[in-house]
Image (cartoon, rainbow, N blue to C red; front, side):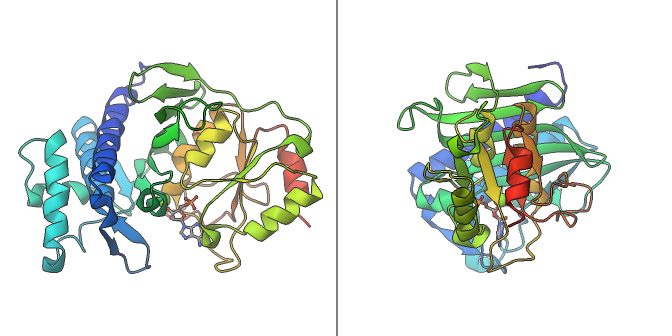
Length: 326
Ligand code: AMP
Ligand code: MG
């Protein structure tokens, strides 16, 4: 991995600090407290803390870069949520001593919804529902230039490091640079290894991964597709972009995200796919929407030109796209 790219070191440092905050919040069980946003999705102390830390570090290192991020401080600043803001500030202060509540809110608001020619896309906690359940979640940061992802980093603090030991040591960081491959780092000891997708070429041998949440993808359709291709292995249900990580390291062969019938016209958000997709691609995988169109990160915060997502080891991509036409 080319550590000479100027963005790599500051971005990894920011994501690792945010990952430590998220794990601390989880261990203290403060992770149970959440605010329901206007779209009814939950946001926790850790989402805010993670965004504050990453925005602060990225702005410091790259003052001219825009950051497009999922959260803002509007709800947090309301007096009914003052206890939550106090807790966010307490956790951020462990990484950035002397943090005030006002500073934390202002760092969160370095993030906006306005894209630029070059910008960072941040999901401070992807898979908040997984985080609240104690399952998988990810901290996802990508650098996008002229609509193309140049760098992707995913911290998955709760994901097993060794694909063959699902109950073993946890805490991985995935990193990809365009044209330079993908690596997985053990968050604890920093050990790195390069990643490549599975070589499975018989669809019946494939392992499918999909969301846990039934409203985020059409599980029944995924099941029918598996039957059609004689795929018998149970689907690996997992929250967050950790799914991209497990395809990149060959643990799963296919990540399916056919839009759920509860929201058939849902448009995916850039921060839910930018980091994960480059990690799967640079490990040799292929990522498109369900019609085979490349993911387009140039339309603003929503991927207006895409419908669903399909990630494969490349070898099986056309077979899956064809089977999706049923
Ligand atoms: P996952 O953990 O893969 O289920 O994905 C979590 C992400 O799903 C969240 O960050 C949301 O932005 C996104 N999401 C919310 N509603 C939907 C939906 N109806 N369809 C697809 N994704 C959604
Ligand atoms: Mg997300």
